[in-house]
Picture 1 (cartoon, rainbow, N blue to C red):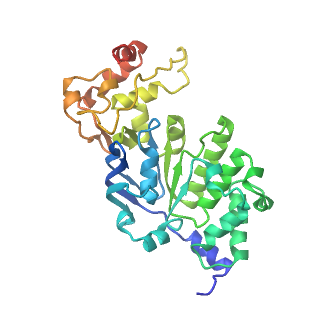
Picture 2 (spheres, helix red, strand yellow):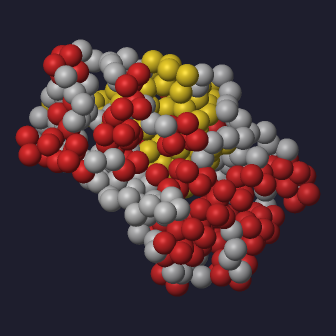
Picture 3 (cartoon, rainbow, N blue to C red):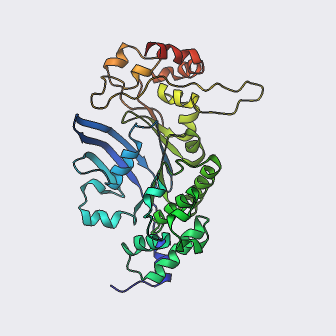
Length: 358
C-alpha cells in the first residue's frame, strides 16, 4: 500500500465523523481469589454524536472499569457481558484484528496517569509518530508533521517533541497524552480522570483545552471524573454511578440542579458552591460510610445502608432505573419525593443520623 500524502492524510482525518455509542446491559466481573467481583452491574447509556457524557461517582464505583471495558483493555480472565455498539458495531464481539482497526481510529483513550502512559526512554514525538504509523500507511515525515500540528493544538511548542517525558511538567505530559489520543482524530474520546494530580489552575487549562478541541473537531466524548464541577462545566449529559450501577442519568442541568436520587443529592451537597446573594455559604456535608463489598453486594438498593431516607423496602427490593421526566431517569423507589429529600439533604443533621448508626 502506498503512503498517503500529507494533504490527503490530513483531509481524510478532518472528514472523520463523530460516532454514536450505545451501551446495553454492560457487566464486568473480575476473577479474584475470593470469588467473582462484579465491578459493573448491567449499565446502559448512550453518547450522541458530538456530545459529552460525564460519568461521575466516588472512587471505586466502577467508572474506570467502564472505560477500559469499552476499549477492551481489562485483564485476561475478566468476564464482560452486554453490548457496546459503536455506530452499530459491537466492540465486544469483534476479533482482535477488527478491534485494532477501531482503536485510535474510531475511539481513543486519554489516560488519567500521563507519566505511566508515556515510555520514559523514548522521545515524546517518536511515541506519537509510532502510534500514527501503527494504524496509517504514512511515512515518518508526514507523521512527524502531524505530531507538530497536534502539539500546537494542545498548546505545546513543536520543538518539545524532541524531548523525553521526564523533561515535561505534569501538565505538559497530560497535554502530550491528549495529543497522542487525538493523533488519528477518533470520533469518540474517552477521558479517564484527565486532570488527576494536577493543581486547580492546570486542571482548568487542561479541561478548557479538551473541551475546545472537542467542540472544534465535533468529537463525541465520555469524561470520567469524581468532580461534579468538571461535569457541570464540560458535559451535556451525566450518568451517576454507585457501586457498579448507574443510579441517575439525564441532562446535566436537570440532574445537577434537581437531582432525584439521594446519592446524587449527597454528592451535590458535598461539593463547594457559591452562596446566593444575601445567604451564608452553604456547608459541605459528607456522606457517611463507604461503598458496599461487591464480592457480596447487599440486597435491595446498594445505597440504602448510607441513605438517610431508606426504608425496609429499600433494603430488600432493588429499585429499577426509571424515567421520571423526558431523558431523566433515577433508580429510587421514592424519586417522586425528591423535592423533600433535597430540602432535608441541606441539613447536616440529616446525614449525621446515618453516620451515628453506621
